[in-house]
Image 1 (tube, rainbow, N blue to C red):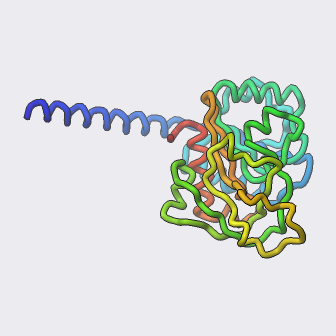
Image 2: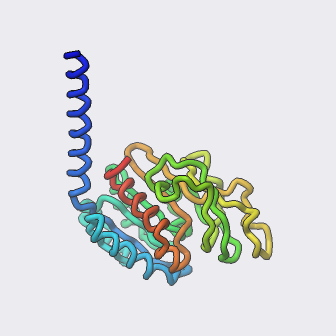
Image 3: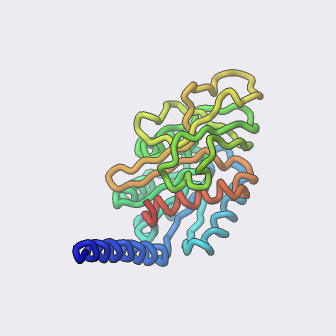
Length: 253
């Protein structure tokens, strides 16, 4: 009986220690860089994405630095950042010096969240392609379609728990290479739900849309959501992106 009581006391202590560590972690500000420079197509939804992130910062204790000036992506700034959120950047947006600083930043175990057009960026930078998981290829016209969930073993999937799928309007990217072999896929496109299409170049058969990786302490997350203003007003997608950022910042596992 005494032995059982001692075990219970230890379990209780460890549980409370874990909760205390989690609460302390949540109380510490998470410093986030939001980068949205466009050297190619520019999504008008960037403004809505920024508003959503700043609105969430008040609730999540985030400190946000938002910029489209790639010249500030240097060690002195990045050393103060926990998570880089690439919000619909496009094209060749970062110079060689900035790329070097960013690689150093990520090598220190920082986090990355790529939103939508983050896959349509820096095609000549192999490190970036590996970080995101793959590069954008094409897409059918933006339209309502169905996302099929594969598993819920990531905090970003919490708002979709209990759902087999989610139907919404977005721009459904296909990719130059299927990332499944090198990332953990969470959701894919139901290609049969696409009704507007001039050709089949966007089809992948196996069509991942949301995934994550955690290699050498570097946490990376990508989500296809974010083409429309409405995506950043959708409560489920807001929680989805919020949890992805907190995971990338190692607040949650």
